[in-house]
Image 1 (cartoon, rainbow, N blue to C red):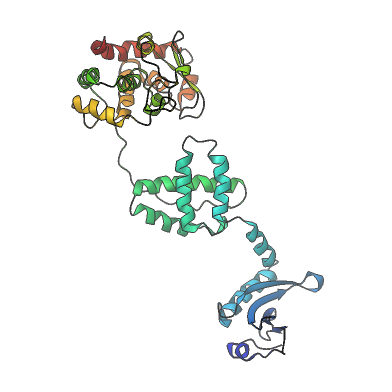
Image 2: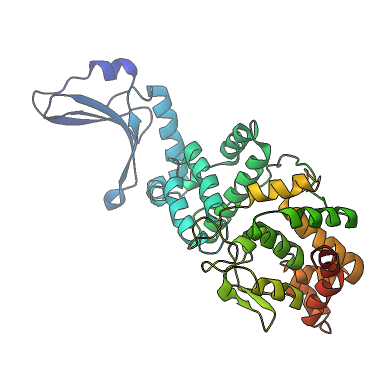
Length: 381
């Protein structure tokens, strides 16, 4: 028994050779100093707490002398012993906490499952890797809102929009951790995202569409012409067009089947007889409709060809995705929002369809034939 003070610790003497002694504090029962000399002659001094009776007696390490002062160790010991007096078991709680994975370990488990259900696994991995750089060595239960907020602001200082995507991805990760009982709260909740500019709304007028088709006729690359026309005549995304395979098309059935679209489930795009006719005349050098440098791989992008076309048309601010918006705008004006949402295969189509059961799939093709095709055909014949 001894009153554990800095002076006492600095003057403790051990017998020669390997030895260990426990000193029990006279002022705070349960507060213990353990002094040990190892076989290498080095002496370590560690603070512990002892609590419980008989066979139920337990020891809990607080930390090393030097890392903690006597006052800091005593304060920790008081907190632990107070928890014990209230019926708690801090040793068990510490053991359970140690079983909670590090954040860096958890995200690997999360990514293994999450990337199977998304069309953008690369982005999820990118954002969570940035999070791991910030607090990967903390246990997932130790990642608090202030920690997330600090990282969010650091990322947002340079890239606010990217910070928002990072926060959304991280929030989904913690939502899964809550479901698996790893944590009780989502530290991302309550953090306000950065304000973003309104989404792009650019659509082409009828006059601009005619100028675009004039420029398209002059484009020397037949596959650039075909890609732009498929975007315009179907409302498809450029990525879907560049990955389109001949095997995906049923020319007689006027269908283009997407086995792996953005939505994640197979979809059908209805094409018109006009579109099918010119597709049949397109040269075939490999499995992909839009030919690239390697006939066995999809074309990487349409940047060079599209830049030529839009420059020739005098439309330098128009993107390929604006063509999809333009198709939507034209059909909404002529046939309404519901038909447009079906043509573009938006995620709410099934919900919308449940309220408009009288609509038929053929109406989507009819909308393309009566609204979009006349504008395209006017210039291409």
